[in-house]
Structures are given as structure tokens and as C-alpha cells.
Picture 1 (cartoon, rainbow, N blue to C red):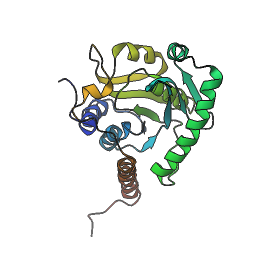
Picture 2 (picture 1 turned 180 degrees about the vertical axis):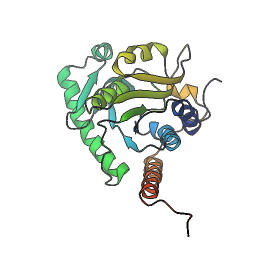
Picture 3 (picture 1 turned 45 degrees about the vertical axis):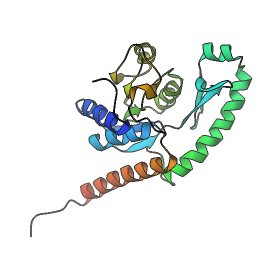
Length: 231
């Protein structure tokens, strides 16, 4: 196999690989927006709750998709800088911190839209599985990993359909396990490894998260009040 039909298909393939691991107390953490359709399939297969790791890239002025750094919100906001790209773009630490403040406000706004008031699932003691639709430079996911690690998961797993091997090697010391289905060489942009890589809209993220929350809620209700076949 080379590449994926779309994010949902990639998520199904990733879910199959993860289901073989038998994680204790799994919690799936999606990087929106592109990671959500992938993570929904994983959470459904594992019967796990789904939450978000809200990360925003800080792009270089002349190429916004090229991440000079990434920021993730929380009690202790994390900024992870790609030093070589930041230097190439002429961005100082002060520049990056200013851009990070703007992105933190955007993260807060987006979480309100996506989660509709649902509280964050505690990570402490869980097998935290960070899911995205792919990795390029690793700046975004590195920020997510650092932020999640500070919340004391029992195990920290990075799961993606596709990524360059050298980036995965750089990330490997930061997690307990990496699950990646494909490491093509040469590696192009993430979208080059999908037949359908259309932008995921906010409305789709809201719908998918609501569906995932309902599945978990229904499962909890069934476990609390199991149906009986006895008359």
C-alpha cells in the first residue's frame, strides 16, 4: 500500500494497528483540524474518550505553512521552536513570544467552538495517544508531546498514518511508543500521501467530536445500568 484514500481510511488503518496493543485506560488526543477524522476512527475502535490537543503553528512570514515554532495552551503554555527555521526567517525569541500570544487566544476561541463546553478529559494515569493526519517538520507535534507529558500520562504514544523517518527518529526519545504506518522516502508534503486531503472545516470537527462524545456517554451509561435479559 502507498498512501491513503482519505483521513477516515487512514484512521481505520491506524486504529487496527493500535487495537493490537491493548492499552490500559486509553485516551485519544487529536490535533485539530486534520487529526480529528483520523482520531475519531481510533477512539471508536479502542472504545476510548476523545479530546483535543490544541496546537497552533507559528509560521514564517513568507511561508506560513513552514513552522518556525508551535504553541499549545494549558496551565503551562508550551512553545517549541525550530531553531534552524526561526534563524533562517530572522525571527527573534521576542518575535516568537508575541506571535504565540496571538495564537493562544485563537486556541481558546477554537476550543470553545469545537468542544461546546465539554470539559477536558484528565490525562493523569491514562495511556495518552496523540493522533494527527501526518507529520512534516515535527514542530507541531513536539509541542503537543511536551504539553501532554507534563500532565503525567501512564504511557505516551504518538500515532500517525504517515511521517518522514528522520522526524520520527527525532521524536522517539520524547514518547514511549510511536505507531506510524508509512515512512515514504522521499517524503513530500503530508497531502501528497492522500488521494483526498481536502481541508477539514470547523463544522466537521464539531460534528465528529459530538458523535465521539455521545458514543462514550452511551457506553458509560450502559456500564452503569446494564440491560438485563432476566424477567
